[in-house]
Length: 429
Image (cartoon, rainbow, N blue to C red):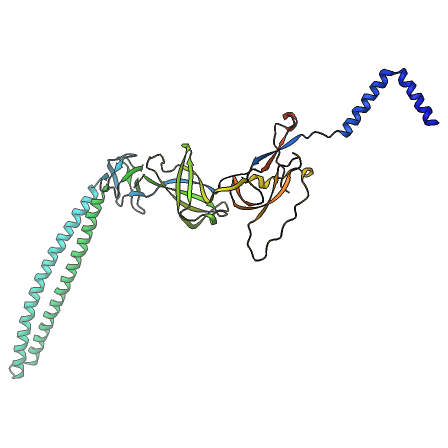
């Protein structure tokens, strides 16, 4: 009875206040709609189709372009450079004269040593004459001693005369030995003076700087009038690139990546001068000597490249990519799809991982999220991956071509609310 009375009074109030009743009804309906209706999402997931194509694994590095064979031309004599016959970029051939050093001092030394050789030879002739004279004197003393000995045996000469003859014989022998020693000394002096003469003549020839090999002058360090000193080390005058049609890149590879580098791998690189040109090369050598810079260890990788068009110049900076693995026509997905995770509220229950078969080495497993029938209910898949590159990763099993893998989360909020950021990739769980 009480409820009926309340309904009767409410009905009469509604009849008397039709406008207010309508407004109250609209407010109640709006509140119920807000409570019941789903809240629209302010984001969406972006995906890419799974397809086939090339998968590349590369190691990035930087290095310098160098001539394959660079020759530094110096001088072993000191003096003033009087003439320079070449300039930068001058082509030269083996044996070509590059420069000349003032030969006055070296020529005077040659003349001085020539005089020493002549003096030594004259001294040798004199000692040779002394040897002949000593031999003659020895023969005379030997005959005289023999006569004195015979006479002494017959009693015609005293013992004192025989001793005097023996003394003269010994003196003659000593004189011959001295003359022979002087001859040996004279021969040694001639050999010494001749060696000094050869050295002086060699230095005289070295005042003319010649190219040891054919190539191109890439550096010139002297001008006429420059004084060079070759006292402690050989000063460099020129630098020749022996063959500019073949160059090499000396790339510095981090120790974390050096284990992937082997001889013969394909390489691509660019230089700042030609950013649209991609140069192709091959790894020739991995040098095992470590280079440590600010506690960072790296290794030098030598890369050979043809330079038939002459675009590459020594000293250019090369941005190198060494291809350490390649698969063609592989089922692939973007590599960032392996790192993508949807928002926590949209993730389904975890997929139970299948245990690996004992004794069998299997490919590593990763988790991917595929687009489902509901845009906000991604399908979680476990896949086996093969070759993993920076851009794409090979998929061995778990999905098929044509599937759509999610790669990022895109915000639908106005830019003013998102601080000009329209993408927000969720972190991996």
